[in-house]
Image (cartoon, rainbow, N blue to C red):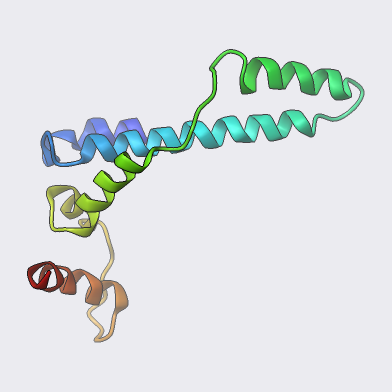
Length: 122
């Protein structure tokens, strides 16, 4: 889904606007979580193969073939955070499908309206 979204919207945002960083951050997070889930499944492998089956699963699927994945680094997280907390094409892309009610006091709507004011004051 992440790669489909990237392929579909990459021309809307443009190069250097943080869309690549958002995609990379999402993929690194998903890879890490998938590897962690496989490792936890291997640790909990049921009988009759028990520990042997868990060892095989853990050594081949969880770490053996693919190496070790890690969460996105601070630099990538800071880059993405900067693009999402300041007015940008990337932020506009994600705002496009956010539901905002017409009711006074809608928290999401208030936050989105306040962003340009906060950024100008900063």
